[in-house]
Amino acid sequence: MAKPRIVCVVGTRPDTIKSAPVIQELRRYQHVCETVVIATGQHREMLAQALETFDIVPNVDFAVMTPGQTLADITTRTLSQLDRYLAEHEAQIVLAQGDTTTTFVAGLAAFYRQIPFGHIEAGLRTPTIWSPFPEEFNRRAVGMFAALHFAPTTESADNLRKEGITAGLHVTGNTGIDAVRQVAERSTAQWADDHPGRVILLTTHRRENWGAPQRAIARAARALLDAFPDTLLIAAMHRNPAVREILRDELGAHPRAQLIEPPEYADFVKLMQRAHLILTDSGGVQEEAPAFGRPVLVLRETTERPEGVDAGVAKLVGADYDTIVRSGSELLSDPTAYAAMSQAQSPYGDGRAAQRIRYLVLRFLGIDAEPEAMWDSSKPSSTA
Image 1 (spheres, one colour):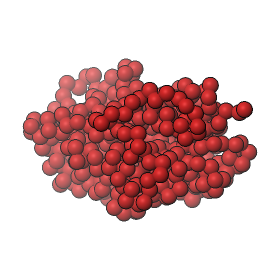
Image 2: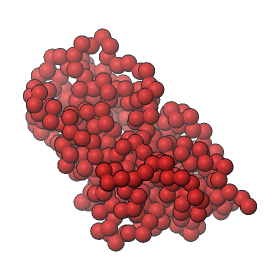
Image 3: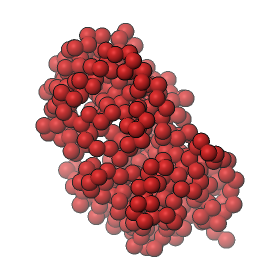
């Protein structure tokens, strides 16, 4: 009898990083199941970086990325190729992570073929479908037809319950914590060795921050540099030209600003550890930085990760110049305020989410594999 086939679909650096621990876990059980990895290539170079970091070689690469691609381009090309693959290769379940266009299309392709879909990092929500765009739509849409919902926190599970979703709902913790801990243990990268002071890390790429909001963010970062002479700003520039141009205009000439290419994931993890303060609109960084006790100022008006804000490890500041400067200055000048954020407990899990997801997927397929990561009252639960 053929082993059941599990198809894992990745397309960008963030979803690859968070899918990697699950893929690794499933491949440990190759004696009872076959795990196929499909890379859509939604983000070409940054996807390759993440795959290499975790020693994952895709079985299939669609290479859909083209210059000037639109969301419609990505969606139609990816859907066509995924549908063709699923028509030609029997699959018992399809898995994808998060809220990318790749994830939405993977779920849609599975739905069209009536194949169960497992959503890793399910249940994240903001108040409006337009922010973040298109991610909020993607994750809501997937939630309507997923057979398994792997919620990272109890709050994410509650969001799904409010939408009437209870079947197949499990709280597992966030696989991003699994990934960041794994990489931190083995990375030897060093940052700003010749700078004796504090480092501010800036990452920004969200569509809602393109243009005027991006300029306000860059100017606020420059103001913090000017107000605190011991600080060095490192800005990891997204590959989008609209983001790069503004960062270069506003920060490129500052003697204590370093504008760098997006580091490989292992190097970026070490950069987060080196940072004293992080300014970001990235969802993943909101989860990862608290694992190292680094306060995060979230450059967004809303966040689908309110647990960090509620726990005190992150603070919403939007793209408002005055708010960013005021909040950043407080953390850079007030040790008590800094300690309150840096010493708060991260709410995103214990680093065993991938083990739980592996166990639940195999159980869904009727495979009796030992639950190596036991649930207890202080950790994410096996059922929501």
